[in-house]
Length: 523
Image (cartoon, rainbow, N blue to C red):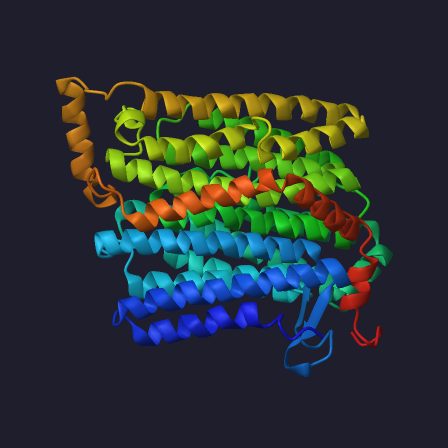
């Protein structure tokens, strides 16, 4: 019994309630509570990771109710690693949001709404990572999604409401499918406890097991934004405020990948859907990167690269070997920080240049060299330039694919290489047009068209171009880039830790023993 486990879930919820009571009053106190709570949760997450790595999975039964009746929380190496990186990213984005709010006086992201909703979203994310039964995983997803519905429509502008409507409808459909899959598994096995499910699913008729697996993977696939379930993402994420877009892109899709990892290693081992997963990985890589190549809006371009790199993670899960799972775990954690850093940097670009459109930007390397550095480093990392962590993660995935040796797997290896090169091309295009070329002066007719567009979308535009950037926004972006570089500096130990997490996932005996109820028959 680890008494620390409930705290990361409960503390953000309590803080969110206190902040709702405070309302718009005491803004300094609101900000202090947000940073303090996320800092405390980060410290606890690091302690849980150390304990899980040294002593095996850590468990807790909420309210002293025994499993499978009560709520079981469990932290193994994977969930603890996801928890540490996610909360570190969340803390950085919160500092960025505070800097933006203090500069803008919160006209678009009202402090009394953003702060409690943000903490509630993280309570859902943390609960998803620590859930020891399938229904609690569903509850964690729903807490996270409920908060995300508010965050993606902050400000109530027409574009955000349109994008939010699409996002909400897709999310509700995936949640409905998730709940039906839970009902199927409970009817077939009599339990939703992860350990008991791992033991009892093997005895189910093959058709029932495959039906439940497909339903779960589809629900997780929508949240992870794998192709063709990703069409909502490029239209939804770019309309939100920069901090919201950054945390959504960096984090929420990875919660879906976490669900896929759990399903394919613990509940449905054996690679029964290996071929469909490989095809989905291939399509996600290629369609995502081709979409990125033709974009002129930086945030939409990054949204498409997000879809393509989700394909790398699905590829590793589909291969299924210890080496592939280890590379996938490392790549997921690395990508959380990289994608967040890129979206934070794009927020700085938008603020400094007055637009996120490559057609309207130029000359930022001379006028804002620091932003150039903050974009260039994670961009090269995402492109897989050695010796950065993006190269390490992709190398591990490619090596695992070559060791597998299957025809379809080798096709995926080639697709991964092509995707990496095209990702680099897309990001170099951003650099050349936004930073390297001279400032663009459009002809009169183009300026007239832009003026009409600006008049129609006045409520959607960022604050006017500003030569001075808020220190909190710049400092948070520097911190996030530094966190992403930590995966390169400490690449060896982190790869080794990911390898131990993969061993635990592929051979989950310790996890099952920790989560299994005292009375195995007490379903």
